[in-house]
Amino acid sequence: MIPADAEFARAFETTWPASEYADAGAFRVGRGLGAGGRVGSARAIRPDWRDADIAAAEARHRDWGQRPMFRLSDSDTDLAAALARQGYLRETPVAIMAADCAALSLREVPGMTVFDLWPPLAIQRDIWAAGGIDAARQAVMARVALPRTALLARIDDRAAGTAFAAADGTVAMVHAIEIVAAFRRRGLAGWLLRKAAQWALGHGATRLGLAVARDNIAARALYDRMGFAERGGYSYWARD
Image (cartoon, rainbow, N blue to C red; front, side, top):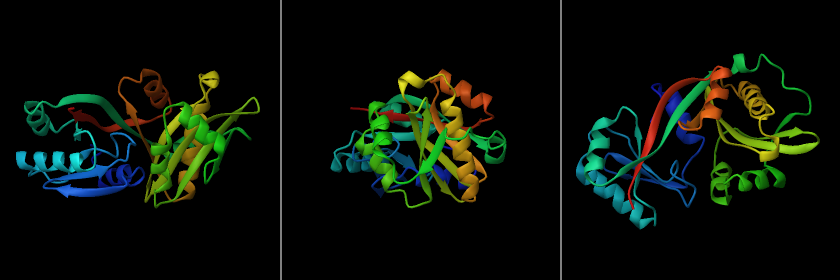
């Protein structure tokens, strides 16, 4: 995983948590309850893993009815090689990016464009669901035990986008950014991020982070323009 500094790495986990965790040797396995790899994967919490620990993590996945899956930092080449020898394949390379909240907040969000609220409105849940962020993933947001908000973007008097943000110390993370297809390419994702940065400053965070698939060229171009810089990266390694 993941970013070099401990505070950012912690926020990456705590703002999008599994329903529970179990340690298997040097690995920590998340119980995802169908909410995707971020919460349903195993990650190394110590460098002294052994093949027996991989087997123990697999057993925990099986106990929970999950596909065996590991989340590896791009730099963890030894573990990647060990998993490859056991038939695991690399999936979904992801970049972790961050920007300064104060810099993002220099541009004022136009009035009546983005609102922050909790709990999410039904229309926000509908927008997420239409974009593949289903009830299981929305349940992740509900169990975050930190300051959190659901951001709602509007345009043409319509609810047009939504995102989730949570803050842990000086780091806030944005997850589940979703813009209604009919309203894309109108700048709403950028306004959501600027509103998230303003909200984060109000909760003591100075950095705003997010995860983006490396093949999502359009999103990465937007984040680059807004001043986000890559802080790390990871991939999933999985097998049937």
